Length: 187
Image 1 (cartoon, rainbow, N blue to C red):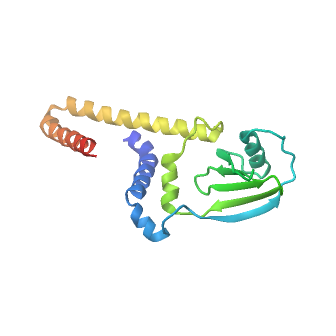
Image 2 (image 1 turned 135 degrees about the vertical axis):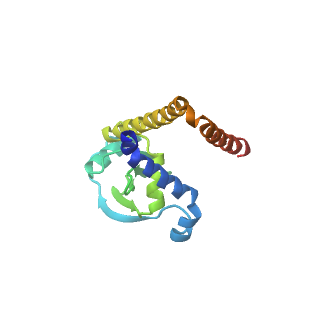
Image 3 (image 1 turned 90 degrees about the vertical axis):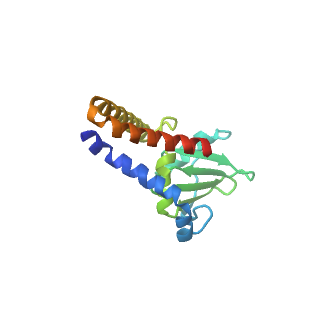
């Protein structure tokens, strides 16, 4: 019971995010198709000194820290030399575009969409970002996974120990495994 209570928010999050992925057409009807649009949050001249020839990680980390958005991100360079930084955030991801030639920095925020917000939970990765909160999230997810495995194994053990439930338990276990195998083979 206590394990179930501890797992409640995790199971709810995974259930709702999976529901959003399973019913994507419903959200497309609500929000339209295509990528999530961004709106300009602010524009500024970025006069801070960037080390010439620095790698993208150094440049992107410096820019994010200086505008108060330090955290997990990815960066790329466009053909025109502009650096595009995608700042990962569960609630409101941002895209920062720095154009060295004009020293212009544009910060855009993704428009909130409930299905995309929920799907971000599934795509969140933490161990390789180098940020403590992301690592904490990854550890919590690993603990939830371990607890779910324990939940399953303890349920099997309880079924096995309660001889009165063997017949019905065997039928339910067989049906569940059979359905899983069916989809595994057919898909």
